[in-house]
Image (cartoon, rainbow over all chains, first blue to last red; front, top):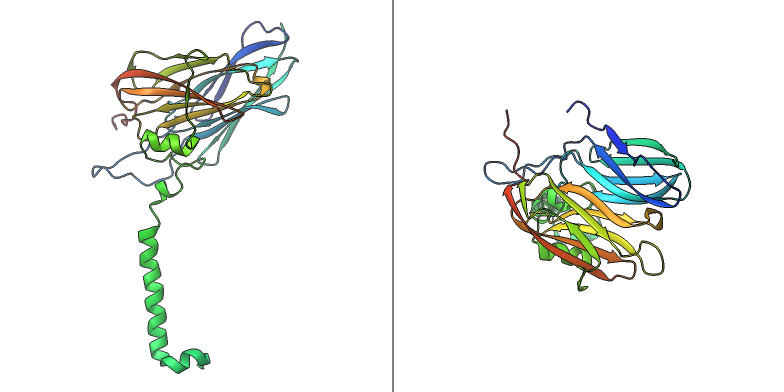
Length: 110
Length: 177
């Protein structure tokens, strides 16, 4: 897992003003699940998973997702965005190791 | 050492020290008994594993005693009937419930009844989202009901329940090489 934290954002090829578009995101992350040892006891450790994804458009938070270990490895989340004006879309993730991963993409009308 | 008057009346210095050590030791033992292990103590807080609980306890914890209204006509849920790989079950949710206005949808929850930690994800919306619609991939531990709950800004809850058959558990660790 050399590239833990890589974030991909995909926008539709055609974006019209006022449209609600679907934005696809992907982040590389193990999303560790709770392990049990041979005695079926929980292995105590700091589990490494992403707990929050935040989406901001032109500096304003528009969407927030609380993720858990029940979300698949390398979480992919598709969310909606109403684009009334062009701008910068930033998707950020926070994980349990205190790391933050983020990517910004320009949203333009086509 | 001169002890405070009140203690000097009742016991000797040695007795006082002995009592003090017993109290400290007793507190240490009690602490281990009363404080559960680290994983569960802070469970449910952001960044900690969800609590290991039955789904009824999850629903109570998240929604209190509020009842659920059937949301089948308002929330479309796309899930496979049979999931080959429980570690990656695609789920799509699309709702006609508004995300703006006086009474708007504030959050969508995905809950898996038979996962040890039923709360899988919570999506929170603002009017800038335009629509209450999400898609992601979740882990299902076993064949289970998947519950999608929509919470409105006035506290109203709508739910859609969909059974999913799971062939390979999504919660088993991959084989260690």
